[in-house]
Image (spheres, rainbow, N blue to C red):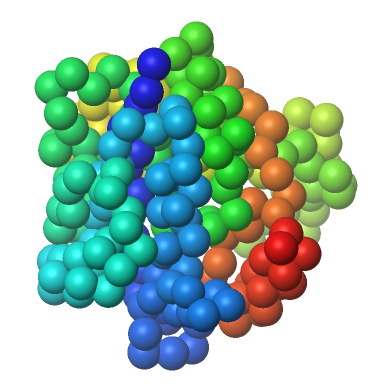
Length: 229
């Protein structure tokens, strides 16, 4: 069974320290967003892609990203919202009627793989809701506002969450509707699903599946890409 991927790409690049949105920054000569989309283009588990971008960028995306790099699985480009959650919500609103599984992935995580995407889709079909992540390797401390340690968390139960996250359509639709009704904003889509009382299963992601948010991340990304090649 194939899934529809929703990729919110509305980053501003503020933490990158430049004026260009981070999805357009070049990674070995190719826009970061293209690296991400190419992985979903190659993934047999994905039938189509919905890309959510700032409304002013829709024409630019088609002209500079989709057409030159032949990203034919991107069937719809929708206007994003003020926050990431709003962009995902707009993507959900444009799902095809026959879509049953939805994969949501950060545009700024270019090192996702077709294998990880396939495992996310399989997990959503089996369990209803899954999120990629990696088990914590370091000791994790919970602190108060003054920086004093409140307690040490059990490391063996701590996961560092990534994307892709995948869901049955009815689950993620209900989660976003409830979040809108409650005016609730979560840090990821799994948090919205958890609020419904639906269990989210973790699947093992990859340490190199980083999210690029700072100039240092971009340097590390260049290293990862060179090593892959």
